Amino acid sequence: MKDNIISFILTLLILVVIICTICLSLDLCHIIELPEKFSLRTYLSDSVAVSGDGEDVIYYPDYDATGYQNLTDENVNNEVDNSIYETNTSIQDNSNELSKFIHLDTENNVNENNNNNTYQYNNITDNSYYYNQLNDYGKTIYSTLYSNLDNLKSGSYTVDFGKTFNELLQNSDGERILGDSFQLSINAMLLDHPEIFYLDVTKMYMFTEATTTLRGTTYKISIGPENENANYLSYGFNSKSDVISAEKEIKSILYGIKSELTGDIYDQIKYVHDYLVDNVTYDSLTETDIAHGIYGALINRFAVCDGYSKAFKYILDNIGISCVEVCGIGENSSGNVESHAWNYVLIDGNWYAMDVTWDDPIINGGTGILTDSLKYNYFLKGADTFFNSHTEDGFIVENGEFSYPELNQTAY
View 1 (cartoon, one colour):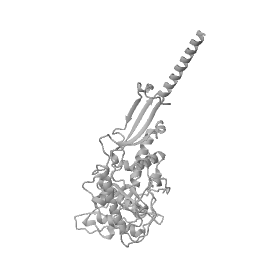
View 2 (cartoon, one colour):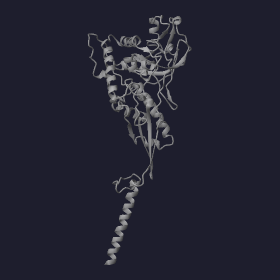
View 3 (cartoon, one colour):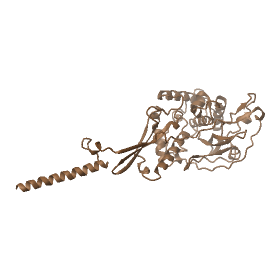
View 4 (cartoon, one colour):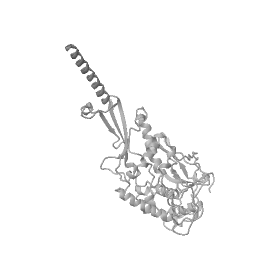
């Protein structure tokens, strides 16, 4: 009898030891999670490595300070004659995968005109032209960042993607694919949404946290400031309240423009074009990051080509006219070649080119007159003339590029 009791106790102890060993092993492998006071992980910490501190800064194209049409009094009335570049064909994707994230002012302000002017209202654009060209990883990054815009206005918020890209990063080329996807998604979002004027993405970093256990390595991704004391808001903005105040200023300008619109789609485009030419001056001196966005163009009234084209798109977006910003190379009347930005506009199913920056040239000497032939030299142009001086360049990263709408062959 006594032997049976001892045998039973020993058997029970062995089972307990086996069960405890199994549980502790599963906990170490992150298969189950034991309470902290029972977990060996409390005493045997995992190997955690965080990379990206200043190394994976997001790249965004910078436009050269000479990205404008610089004319002298002597050539102010001369025609531009440049070598012809080959045009790049492109595919337009009209899907609306991002529509659930888009909230344009036009949805709630169709009838906000304060006078008797009326204009033909157009279809609301979905602002997803570049989003539609991303792979699934890029679309996830883009939509997650976009859904966190209110948080990002603080300039210090970190967007946590958790283990979303863990499976990808297990592959040998996963890091490269993810890096390219981040670069493309950030650029796509800023090209699609000129209203995001307050982020300086060159101050935003992608961080990878690699946790190594007995099971292997698990990767977590986040995007945020370089450190807890850093801020990724554009120059001149220091807080979320600054951004909100600036947004109100911009919307006030927008509503003022909309209240003056009359006529059909051509008349509306012409009015917006003329408003920018008449009210914005090329920023050839400071060229701060503010000059690259709609705040510089609409509020400070100083902008570079990126600011002109973003302001043009922002206004057209909000009156329901499809418009995209295009990046590339421009050869101005002086023969100088530089990085440049302009727009394509959709009218009656066809795309036409607009270069508002070069329709607002700086005339050296101060006595030249901006004639209509200069003011509309790049207004709703077709491929047959526009590509004489403009060359598209959609390459953002080595393994990825954006395509642009195919221009109508002739002008509108």
